[in-house]
Length: 373
Image 1 (cartoon, rainbow, N blue to C red):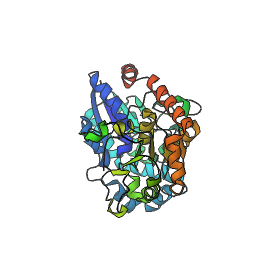
Image 2: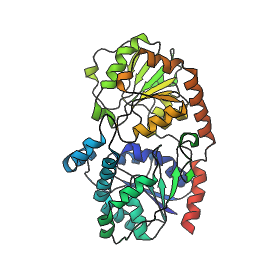
Image 3: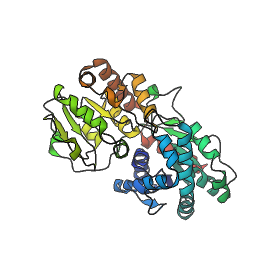
Image 4: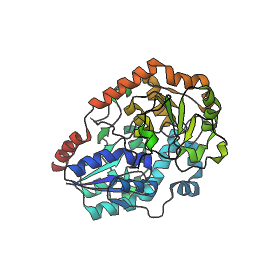
């Protein structure tokens, strides 16, 4: 079986699909990933990738074409949902030609599209093959899909597609106890993928003090800056813990001299880091949130846009963490992250729940049956 994955061109969207791609490859199926820009990083997972938008730089593209939508999506008080839909539709339209061209060349038996990138659904409809939606977090997909498709009438007409199915089979990687009313479609275990790395020696050693992971993801830090980290650094010396700042390729010189209990590591796989931690402070990205839940550690989430408010609320409502703002970061909140047993108990319960969810390998069997119909 030949399977084409279609994803929004960003790490946080394409990485959650990697475990299913690996499972398909391990079962002997052929996989191709269609994405672009930052999403091309998925090639380092050992996958074949088609760049459907050569030269695309996501931030520059939005700034030069729809800056007003970008501003409304990034409002500090929370995103304008309709602006997000319009932004998704704009990018889908821009990349649809490349997605369809790739699909026609690859001739897949099945298309799996990440929940925002409905151009994959359009390509499947044009080729007359089944499509499956792959969700990536706690944001529910049905309304997002329908609203996005409603703005792509001209895109579909351009490719000879009259419409797409209203109901689509969906793979949902959110833990069932954290979504209402229940998982969409097929439930699948969220297996974190953070890219490969040669691990630093210290991350494998048992820490001498309680360790807290701190990250702002791959996008947020470039948009909102290091303000939340500066708040954390002011409180860190009064908290009996080691703080590991995993901020990626970011200039941290503006932070000045760091407290003795703070370590800056640039980039390290969160899956490994969080397994050594008692808690995490982060921006609320779906991949980061699920990595924390997989590790069974309490989280302080500082949502700053997109689906991050939804992810933060889901963790908060489950009792596995706290949804807060950067202004809330103080000694008391950080000590609670270390000491609050109720938060820790709920986080461990979710970790145990995740372990019982169907594996990606079990979902492969369903995909094979669907493609054979």
